[in-house]
Length: 507
Image (cartoon, rainbow, N blue to C red; front, side, top):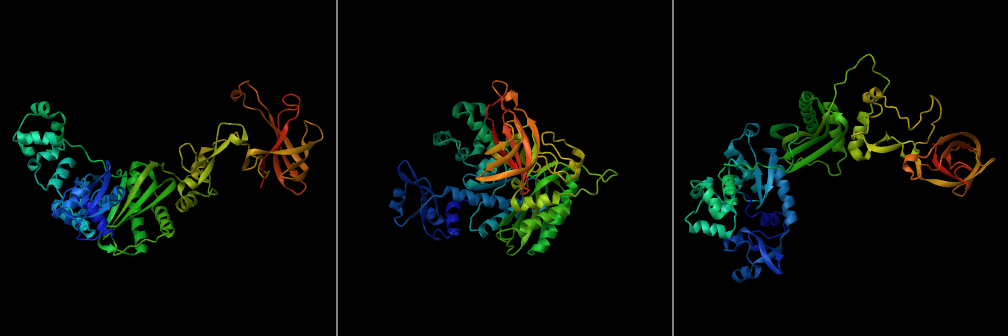
């Protein structure tokens, strides 16, 4: 529990003077209301929820600053991420509290409950935040004990139920002051008198019902870490530690039959700062050397270099995205001439982002502009990566994009104009091949041509069951430039004056 978090956040950021009475205010229904107070203002008898005018009537020198809820939430989230040094199950709660599920984590961090609480309080004080800690079997009970400063949930006041002032007042008039007074009474009469929410809330606070903690970040399927008795401050040594952690992760991934697509490294600095590095792989990966190389590439490309400060005391490697990875076997049929392009794709993904690396993916369409599409590497349905062993085994035929014979020029250009561009064509006969065409104000005289390649319109997409046919020609002009032209519509059968278009240009 951080009782003065909003005010101390402004003080630690240098936005408010320390040891001064001030309030954080927000306009509600046309009036300024106090949302939080500094420790000095609380010692003067003021309380959150008061009107600013009433507070200044008691303390004329009270300063007022705007309440910045978004900034408070961002800093609280950073503190929650820093608390992952103790456990991966961390959540932020209101009012300004951090919930940690440390079940099974004490042996890993080498502390018991008292030592962990003291270490956590010391780290928060170092950042300028006062803290109250409490331990309980459920998150609701722990939070309530921290808010009201109690060690036993049975000693909590009835206000911890948070059921409204009327219910709290009725309970006190009945002589029920603390939760222990309610624990020995049957729930049915309490529910009939004070509402059905009271027994459920009471069970959560008395550790009888566990609401479970929803962590700020989901727990990764594979997670390894290294703790150091002396802080680590050298980047070269950092890369060696990452390689060692990747070796441990490789064994865990191999047991699961998976490889990682996204790897994250958390660097916990001794002063509480947490640096996060992440790399993505084009395909599932678990090779330690390759993983270390990707992180070396990431560190080298950082706009702001890593600042170890006084050193890192914990380094954690998490594999947040895993996919199935088959064990590849070097056999008699393996083609040694095939060069594995996966390391190159991974480096490009680290440098420019995984979504920036795209491959052609065949589609079930015979019109050239729809025959292929761009898809990110490794995306579902994108198929194997060219140049890898998987692509050699796949042998996926791309019937919609014909391949030339060995040594022949490509049958279609790699890039197409979208949409095709209109050109003026001269031919010996109306339905014959082109002899000369004009494009972008320039005339081209054709020396060689190949074609036509006739592509019919997809009749199932036309309301009348028919559409203009395309006759494609590969042409070369006198200067050696090669183009891909087509006549849109069959002469006299589909159009009296068919138009010509240029659909692509060969490299």
